[in-house]
Amino acid sequence: MSIESLTRPGTGPSTGTRSGAPADAAPLGGARPADAPAPRVGRLPTLTGLRFPAALLVFLFHAVLPFASIRLFADPGVERGIYHALAMVAGLTMPFWFMLSGFILIWSAREGDTAPSFWRRRFAKIVPPYVVAWVLALVLVDGVDGAPTTPLQGFLSLFMLQSWVPDIPTNFAVNNVGWSLSAEAFFYLAFPALFLVLKRIPAHRLKYWIGGVVALIAATPLVTYAIIPVGTEVVPNEPGQSAHYFWFAYVLPAGRLLDFALGMLVGRAVVLGRWRNIGMAWSGLLLAVTYVAGLYVPWLWGIRLICVVPAALLIAAGALADNENRFTIFRNRPMVWLGEISFAFYLVHFTVLEYTRHLLGDRLFGTPATLGILLGELVVSVLLAWALYSWVEVPLTRRWSRSRKDREAAEAAKAARAARAAAAAKVAASRTAAETATTATTATAIEPAPVAATATTVPAAAGADGGKGL
Image 1 (cartoon, rainbow, N blue to C red):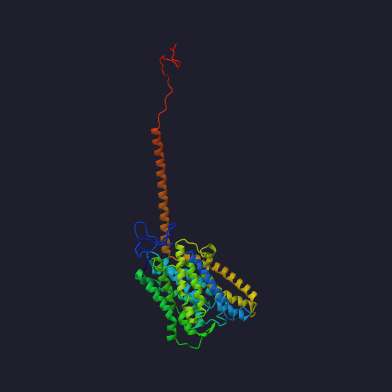
Image 2 (spheres, helix red, strand yellow):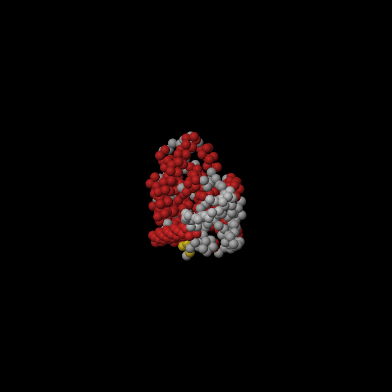
């Protein structure tokens, strides 16, 4: 099954746009067809830079969870106040990341790609750091909030199957944050089939599909209340909320596929010039407003719906800003670097939080001391993420993302290109030398011959003074 690029045959993502030219400028020689993609850059540093603020919000939210295995604040009022302010982080960051995954995969779709090649690249990038972080969590932290991990929970967590089980301890077993990778693994498995459907959607109908998916996301809480039994179990950090509701509406990968599909649809709309961009500033402001509003709406609606549309607007605006080479505060080198290690940071930060609590014993701390400890935990998480990114994610992605046959073919093609370039350079040098020699010969041929210094008989003639010679 081929995963074809959304670009026209024979073309691929542009490495840049002409200086001063809009991203959807028509190609030379004619107008761009309505369903043809606009030129687009290969990298999106703004979206990379945006990843770390989202990861940082998750870190802060997890740092103030009211769990004995994490909490540090001696003042419960301060802890509750910070937790309440960060309560909608779950409703902002997960839709953002899931949509960003779908968007990026559409933006970077390769011409003539195949499903096995796509799955291999995703496996090489995601699985090695996930397994390393899983082992780290298993060794340093036994279970979630003091509850030991069962063999079944460990098995499901290792193979990214934990989110399919309607059981909160299983969903967050071993490495708490691994549940979202369980969803991502499902998205990647489904991507080739979703892509085939996406290609068949006419450009002018994308807005209806986008609206339909948003409507389905909005209906998720209603469906949850209608068909899922409330049960007696509750969400550990939200004791007034049903754990069954939370699992079905928020954790279950099949439901979160809607977020991923929305990112794909938005990505294609942007690529085909069918997106109405409101810019990063307005998108960010709208996201902040909806975040605050989410603190005051029913909890399930807040974490599942309230920030979805603004997050999609922000992702599209960031991609368009990069494509048009416009300044953003997220595309500088430090932010891009932090964004590059954000996946590793996400994988290790919860283990750092729990292990720090283990090292400190049962003692709680005043607010200034706790803030200092949190800063230290943040620094340690960044350093561990850097190591995981540099020593595991990057080298193994390069090593395993292509098969040996593909690597050998790529090396052969590279060698052939180098040989052709060397031959062309040799021919050009020979041609230049020949042209130089021809020019020199021609110049010699047309130069006037020197006049020989010979005696000339001068007849007796009148001198300058008009007199006769002697």
